[in-house]
Structures are given as C-alpha cells and as structure tokens.
Amino acid sequence: MKSSKFLRSFLLSQCKVATMKTKTIGSLIVLLAIATTIASAPSAFAEHSMHAVVENAAGSSTPGCEPDCFLPATVTIGVGGSVEFVNNDNAAHTSTAGTPTDGPSGVWDSSLVMMGTSFTTPALDAGEYPYFCMVHPWMTGLVIVEEEAHDDHGHEEEMDMSVMEMATLTAADIAISIDDGAKAGEKVAIDVTINGEHVNYDIVATHNGETILDESDNHSHTGEGSHTTSALSADASDDNPIDVTVTFQGFGFPGDDKTGPIGLTNTAQAVPEFGTIAAMILVVAIVSIIVITSKSRLSLTPRL
Figure 1: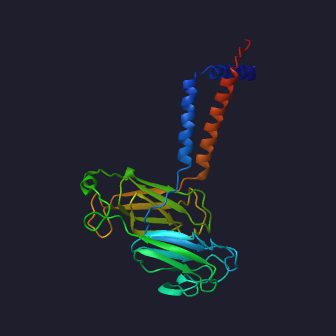
Figure 2: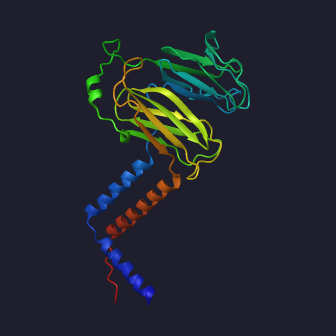
Figure 3: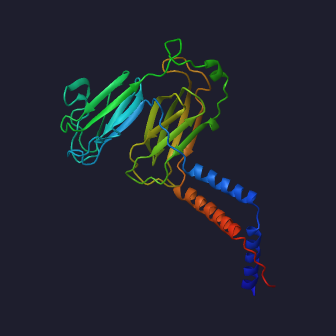
C-alpha cells in the first residue's frame, strides 16, 4: 500500500511538471547555461606575463616533432620577464638563443639540461628571440618580449590613472581559478582575474607543506594572468588541498608609481572536481525530464 501511494504521488508530480509553462522551462535552461559556464571557466593567458614555462616534447630527441618540439613553441612575456625551460624528455637538451643556421646569439645558453631538470633565462629586454637545441637542431622555438603600451611618460597607450585611483577594489574583485583533481607528479594551472587594467600582483601556492608556486611582480594589461605550479608531491584532495594567495600590488605600468589598495589579498583552495560534474549532471537530468514531458504533453490522471 505504501508503495502504491508513493507511485501515485510521483505520477501526480509528473503531471504537474508536464503542464508547466514554457517560461518555467526557459528559466531552468538558463540555470543549466549558468552551471555550464561556471564549470567551464576559461583559462585566459595574460598579455604580458613575466614568467613562462616551456617543456621539451616527449621524444623530441628524434626528428619528427617539428614545429612543436618545444611546448609551447612560441611564448610571449613582458619586458624584464624570463622563461623556464623544463626537460621532461629522456634525453639531454639545450636551450640556446639563436638559430641553427646562424648559431648562438649569446643572449642565453643553458648548456646541457639533463632529464628532470630545468633552466631559466636571464631577464629579457623587448624583442624577439629565436632559440634552438644545439644537440638536436631541428628543435626550435621563439620567445617574444613585448613592452606595455605607454602614455605620454613614454607610454603609447593612454591610461586614466585618476579613474584607477578612484576605483574601489575589494578581495571579491580578485578571482582565482585552480584546476581540479591534480595527482602526484602533475602540474596545476592557476588563473587569476583582477577587476581592472594594468594590474600588478604576487601569487604564492602551497601544497603538502611545500611551496609549488612563488611569482612576484606579475603585470597584466587586461587583468588576467595564467600560472603553472611545479609538480605535486602528493594527490590534491579535501584533506590536502592546494592553497593559493594572490596579493594585489597596485594599478600602473612596470617601473611607475602604483595606485590602489596595495597589499589587498585573496585566497582560494582547489575544489574537488566531482562536485561540479555532479551538479551539472543533476541540472541536465532535471531539464531533460521537463523538456521531454512538456513536448509530449503527457496528461496522466491516476485512478484513486
């Protein structure tokens, strides 16, 4: 008897769902769109990040990896920034400024970088820097170093500093996005978005009692920055999360006086991947039931 009453109640509820107006269905579809947008937050790269990481493609010691023997093959950083070359291949490589045809330019030369180690270039001036591996000359890449657009202090792009000074920036205006579900040995992508232009900030990430990312003096024209941690020593989890702190260092161009609430911080932890996926599946299931029953215009009248 109890199961029969439960079945009747369920059928009655489905009848009500089937007669819902299109307006209600539309609202739930909007809810699905919002959930999908949140779950697929984009990773946007800063125009002028001060640090970039380049890795050797697996098997790049053998011809055939061109043009992506270095990953990524082309990176763009700001003036004074640097590039870290990480060798994850099973052979030794070099990162040498210059070209296989003309030889080394002398800007930097890593000498042999053994498997599992890395090399970081010195701070670079504006310009384009082709580079290659002297051991495997088919491996080539390009580093682009760009200056920020400047105003009448030498800047080409005008920036209204008075507007920046009046802007009220709070911790809520510093958004931090962390890739979910990272395992031991994996690196983690962290995206930072600060409400404003020509923002400067520091970022520190820790996990398992270790500092896995520590980058200062980051500058972004658009307010967006992308960073990559070192490899994790253990799986990320609720009990062992990745902690990220972003400290705002003011509005302004590199080398100029900064304005705004310097020292303002925001923190974030990696959120378990399953929670977002489960929420999306639940919303999709609800919307699918409503849309299907509405289209079929079911009219169920249970017998009492």
